[in-house]
Amino acid sequence: MGKGGNQGEGATEREVPMPTFSWEEIQKHNLRTDRWLVIDRKVYNITKWSSRHPGGQRVIGHYAGEDATDAFHAFHRDLNFVSKFLKPLLIGELAPEEPSQDRGKNSQITEDFRALRKTAEDMNLFKSNHLFFLLLLAHVIAMESIAWFTVSYFGNGWIPTVITACVLATSQVQAGWLQHDYGHLSVYKKSMWNHLVHKFVIGHLKGASANWWNHRHFQHHAKPNIFYKDPDVNMLHVFVLGEWQPIEYGKKKLKYLPYNHQHEYFFLIGPPLLIPTYFQYQIIKTMIVRKDWVDLVWAISYYARFFITYVPFYGILGAILFLNFVRFLESHWFVWVTQMNHIAMEIDREPYRDWFSSQLSATCNVEQSFFNDWFSGHLNFQIEHHLFPTMPRHNFHKVAPLVKSLCTKYGIEYQEKPLLRALLDIIKSLKKSGELWLDAYLHK
Image 1 (cartoon, rainbow, N blue to C red):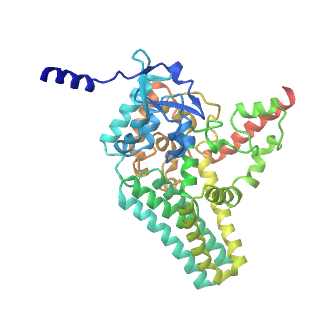
Image 2 (cartoon, rainbow, N blue to C red):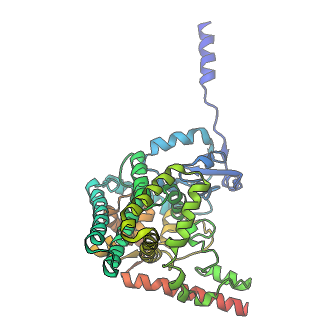
């Protein structure tokens, strides 16, 4: 009787074999209504859960039908915590005969990159220097104070107003780089503290939305310079980018604007208008449509503080004009810095590359100097930032030699430019794409 009972107990505890799948089967599940992905050879059905994904359903959906292992490790700081959410979604694993990488991606590069990441972890390069970020926050607040003091002491004449606007624009840009650090969870070990300070910096210091930024920016990191996946290359027919898009527009006789002159009108509608018009409208609309009331309250606190500070000097209309002038100046700085690392690189449809190769094809660096580091918020190390989004920016220069070494091993170009050349390459790239469009428009 005892023996029989033991046998029954063993039978109940016997594990049910895990279903196995081929890549051919997994790749069929890449639709909005049917999404599977693979992490560490385990297959997950994320169809229903993707709408609850904290980083947004689009970023996780971009990996439907693919191996998402490196992206999963890149974006999540606390793997033990996020792994709990994966358990209910597990439906099987890759069949033993299937390679770990889909679509013939280079498994050796992937293996070496993971070893490089492990080396970086062993070197404590994911460990943050809290004093570094505290000083960055302090210098932003100091500039806000200097701006108020300037107009308070010297009055609201043209010269004090222009000086104050320049100081505030610098403060806004630096706050933008700082919110970027917290948004990527690269400051604190606990995600909760990163999220909280992120909302304060982007909301109270900048008047923007943390959730809007997360949903947009993480897509860019997941699939940089990929049409239909990276929102940063969705130019709403205003510009054509890369080589494929202008030729397609030309063949289809699409002429929303004279794209052969886009390198000229870029100066009129690119840097001047992105933040004051498009971003400002999109942020407010997104918070209201998605009922992001917490982000909206943080944003309102910024505008309340700004108008309480500057209405006494300029009046209501004057303060509104002053705010938009600050945004206008900030927008120039932001556009040039963010585009110098990407727009001159490969921009195309989904090529299905491994994580390392895909990030290197879409990013380039700008030479290191104290000024370049500060001016760009260390985004002059765009390659390292894209490979390791949660790495604190003050450690990028330490991991760069390891990345260069891996590039050399596989013959992958590691592009690093002087600042001026990187800025000029934006215009050269726009001009080249415009010429491709015109040639296709006239002759194909």
